[in-house]
Length: 345
Ligand code: UD1
Image 1 (cartoon, rainbow, N blue to C red):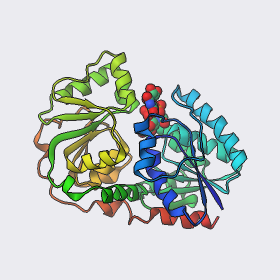
Image 2 (tube, rainbow, N blue to C red; image 1 turned 90 degrees about the vertical axis):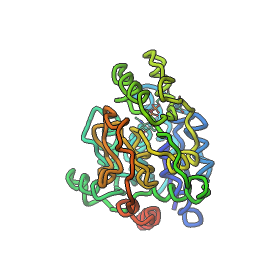
Image 3 (cartoon, helix red, strand yellow; image 1 turned 180 degrees about the vertical axis):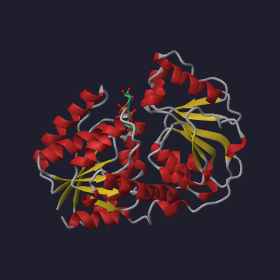
């Protein structure tokens, strides 16, 4: 059996890793890299940290408008799939690479499995929401990570092709934690690990200015690990990121990210992945959004939706007690469940 995974952006490398480990010696697994993310820190560094085998092809599609990027990936993916003739294609998450991958595979009549299916923000102005909805409806098998995702898919009439498998993400998280020495994060350090990259937070001047000024006024130092989109937009709008409590860094590797999340006082982010990494690390997280697809992380006051960062300089960060973060994301056997499912097609 030949399985082809289509990935292109940072969070997808995290999700493909456990599939690459579990398929080894069982079936042929080939990775197509669309090239949506191309900087070393956003791409190659993830392959290295997670011991992911090299892609069989990289398209170097790069950046562009949604239409340009999606169309570029679509054309190259179709040609590659015709050459490779997979038995099944796996797509991951909600990026433009996911959308183009699902379109190319389904129109060629190739069975398609969507890993991390069923997430919804119910906000159609988010490009990721459009990518999720289309990819779920086109795919043949929907691997849902949470009960919320399963219910979303049932509501859209997709229950028959849905499998509840837990979150593949925790396998990569655990893999990283095992690579880090416990002594490296025994003592919490006084800083907030911060990332901002979503269009709704970076692409309007007033919105970006407001977020930056709130961060600058934080009592706890803010370490921003700046995605290239943030740097680009801040320059465009003449917003100075280096002000007040803010210290700007380049994006760090996955290993460094997990280590930092484990040792930081808190996380401030608009990323879906970081909300979960914080939750699993028992690190409190303020999410700079009005909604989250990971509703389960809102139980117990560990993750708080705070679109205007009203809580940043309050005592919210203090003494959160304990919780069992693994209860809601499955038992770490997601990749095994996915493998069993694809072997039976
Ligand atoms: C994409 C995904 C988003 C995901 C995020 C993870 C879509 C619509 N969005 O957003 O769901 O959460 O990845 O990081 O697919 N750039 C570089 N170097 C790179 C990549 C991008 O400089 O290696 C810059 C370019 O200026 C580009 C901008 O970042 O225009 C945005 O990149 P893009 O891939 O379009 O979207 P992300 O914001 O990364």
